[in-house]
Length: 296
Image (cartoon, rainbow, N blue to C red; front, side, top):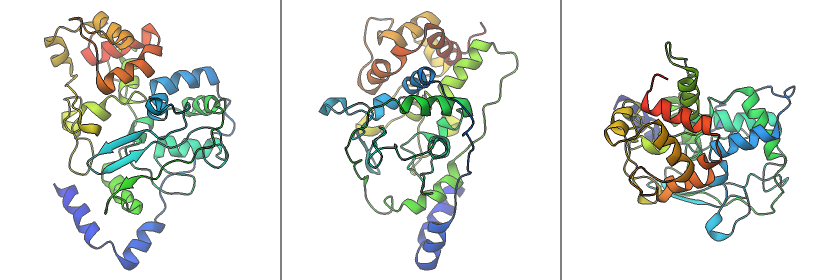
């Protein structure tokens, strides 16, 4: 509530000179990945893990791979995923690897503007320099699509992009993952995938009225997802109480089939179709071990 009060007060005074100062307030740090050589195959694997294909390809309308245009309807308005192909003006073909790194891990555009957190950069902050270099190398292989990104359809005050700098100051946590003593390498790998690129908490954690995740209820499920959906809790206790074990969870992440013969629907079905089905069996098992908090 204290954070919310500060943000409300800031919004009330956000006019005139104050707005100008906020708009010019620099954010982000300049990365230096020029000397790293990316591996496209590993980057393509990470892109599947991170949901890039699912969110930036408008399959329903016959959109081309990574050309954007997928609508995400929320309480704040409708977001549209941008074009990530190699087109020089409509995509990211005019970017450098450092522009890409700053966007992916810090949520800052090449011209210094903040991205909306509908783009899960708070999770991608866990990517290493080599991860980003590999992703960049993979994106360089995507054919250019001459299709302009759609503008975000948001009402006031959410359409004031400079105000996102206040949101970032309050809610953007870039703390790196800390290895947990006594846990296996598979558990640690699962933690990296779940809390990093796969950004499971983006849908499975409730959010406050400003769209920030409620950390104290991580993975406890959420109402009011985009397009009116809901997500179940996926904490270890809940998963175990519903009969999930390592093998059944890993199998579901590959096929979409649940232990009772049902199938994942909605957005989770898309996550499997476009993402986890492409992961290695070892990585799917790592996710299961972490979510179920197993000792193996």
